[in-house]
Length: 269
Image 1 (cartoon, rainbow, N blue to C red):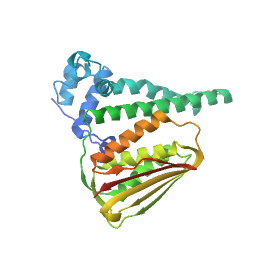
Image 2: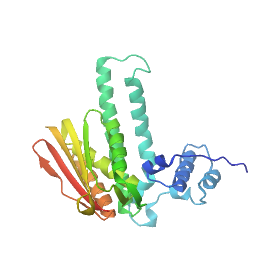
Image 3: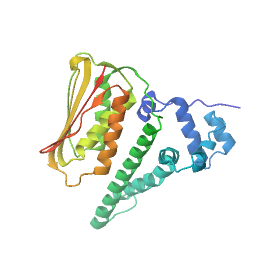
Image 4: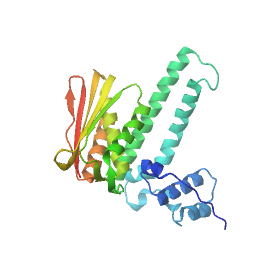
């Protein structure tokens, strides 16, 4: 059989926090769900004869409805319709399907924001399920933490242009033994958590390596939000603290301030 080499930038795999083999498996599953490949072909692409069996979820194996297992299994099907809603709403708002009225623009903007939030919540649920099941593992390496944080803040800023971000890093030695993908996730989630507490304002990030540990402080300043976003905040706090603990570090309890939220964590070198 002829073969084709598919090159995937390492940065993308790190951002997705998956290995090349896991990416191959995910591609096989997705093509099978889209009915582009049959079961035999998907198994061959994944390099796993049981890959399709993993799509068959049943409570019979445990005797009860295991929500963590279900979320891990159903994440593709949960996200796909929301991605369609978000994608088509964005296309219409940009006028690519023709002109729309001011009222339609307002309504569609509400749909888009709601879809984006729901997609984020599903993503948080899947992360929590993987953490609960012990499926989240670190791939530690000596990494320049200053570059890791810069990559995370750059990506977050693109998605949150309405809230300016200020960063300040004072690192005598920026090399830390961390999982770069998970560390980017920690920083991104912390920025999101802080920003949820203000409707208008800024977010600041300070990083240092005092006492041979990475110390990060993130704080939001602005008009306090009336919506407490309790669900989002609770899930984000669990995910962040769990990932920090996997690194052998500690996250302090969030502190409400007069104009925002203060968050701190530290991880050993």
